[in-house]
Image (cartoon, rainbow, N blue to C red; front, side, top):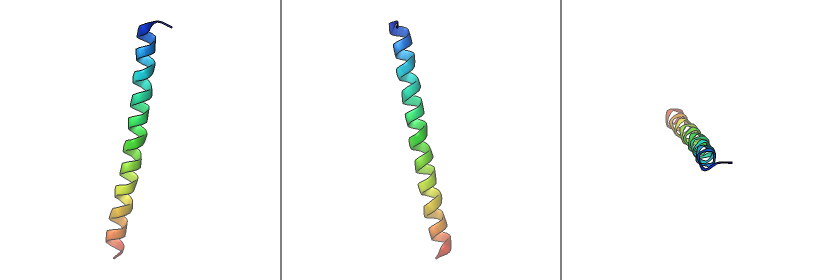
Amino acid sequence: MTLGQLLLLVLIVVVVWLGSRLKKQEQRLKELENKDEGE
């Protein structure tokens, strides 16, 4: 693997990791909103 390919691989991993974290945060926000509406 060249340095460019390695950097590209790292970039992809970071983007996927950040994306999964954002989805988890959105799910938490929706759950909190549903709890507020339920009260």
